[in-house]
Length: 450
View: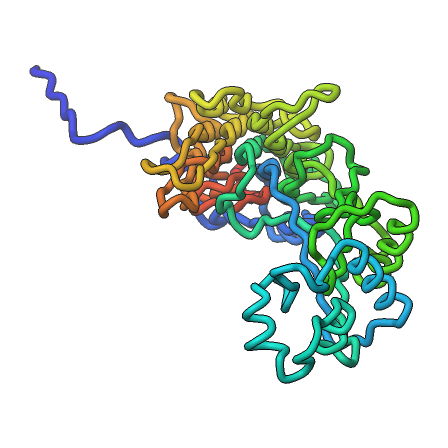
């Protein structure tokens, strides 16, 4: 008799899609996504005849490392404030010591600038004092008879981190590395072997690292407002700024009187820390039976070794099934030219993908051709296996942003590591499109005929 083979079309149907001949059709399997902190009560299911369970536990992804950012100071200027006599007199005396407006000169100080004598005499002051020069003190009292002044109060230092637009004088922006994806672990067994209430923990994604200053490695570094170091030698209070340097002790004492009233930096003088690494993703667990770690946070954009500053930007390692400590999975990228490593999957234990390497860019002002960039890298795939591609979590790809230099886009934002499609259906543990960055705990409950 001849043998006939029917090849059919397409790939073989995976075993996970075939019905289990031992499962009772009267008890269809039920899949639940469990909530953090709410225990699984087995009696709710065992009492109606279910016998077995399979649980998928996924860790959360790590956060992106912070970048360096310029420090900004915002002066709060208060107008229409009466200048105390001691302050007014000190400022006038200081100006008198170096401004000369008497006969014999051909210029006079008017409204913050020197103007020719003829303009001053014939157009400005002739109706007031036609027979003589006006002294600087008379001039000040004429234009400001009520001695109204203003006070600059510098606010607490902050970081200009709303965008990545060009900052003149900056050596460039180094973005932190991306976080690793969450690991996965699959467990199974008899409902009868579980405790009455199984504690459930669902990991939360790690927060992105805060941006920080790159002027000093100390977290206690306190930056100073503009020209604060000059406050003993220059009148910096807004009404008197003229960039004249005073050096004698008597003059410096008067300068202090003026600046202590009108150029203020109130306590407390708060520190601005350097960039921080991304936080690690939290682990997820089903009792003490099944656990999977979260991905490590990405490194910050810069680091110091002693007093030497350099770029860091390394991506965080992925998590892994079977442990609670963050990391343990695929390695994060350590070079701009390389994506994060792919995580492995053996059917029980899976590794989260490694995070991508952060980019760096410096959009120079007035330079044509766009920004000078060091491109970021992509994250790695999560829980990937050629033997079973039904669960792997796709990588997050690097992203582009406008550079602030003519709208040119630069690919400097790194991609995070991939997570997993838990139970072949639920994407979790990654910042890739369509995935939850948090972890997950899924349980499938079914009855097996004895």
